[in-house]
Length: 306
Image (cartoon, rainbow, N blue to C red):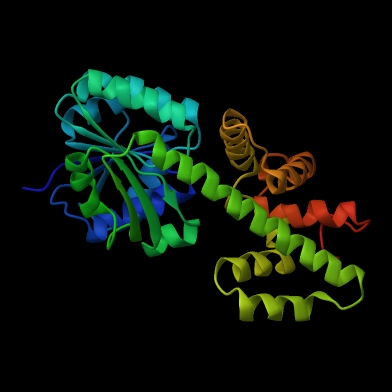
């Protein structure tokens, strides 16, 4: 009999991950779905085939029913709150955290879960919400090999297209890769933004720059280029990668760098532009809004529309 699954957290990523576990994962009972805003859990469950999921409002009660508990939330405080609420129920159960948090936070949470008699796997994921919907994320798994083996059936072929297996490595190792890996994304967005602004200011225009990006850097570069030129970076009500979460990741990356005695120069540039996005857009800000911040710095309007 397949384990009973509890999923806690329904941000932009969580919804797609739950959908794919329900459709393709080794489950034979409804996935218990919890979100702090109960209506979001109910909405997701109503959108999926009957009997695949069940919205729950009591996190401790659902944890008592579950065999495997997945958490995927926005920041360190949120995942810490979830773990503390389920600790009385984690004995002989596996907790898999897919959140992007500081490596030290992961180490602390793992210690609490292990002390309570549970198992823990750190499993941060790389990929945009569209990749989560498509089951095309990249999972980074760290922890005891036996525990990682229990989490893997929900990764490649279900929520993910590939895994980076860090079995028997410290839990924090997975989060170091996730936090530092996200700096590549910030730096990529910064470069695409600067390239388009330079193309516009020098009179070449953005059309040829976009064509160049599509041909040489298809995939995520091209996707962000499209988001910038289409105006999506300022038009959407709910950001795909919220500026507040990006700034949290920047703080974590800077903390890691400082502890190692180094400076991430490229990240400093992107971080300054993220501050501009926050100032202009508030909570609606998205990391693609770096384009708007670079535009303003060059004497253009933040928005590229009329």
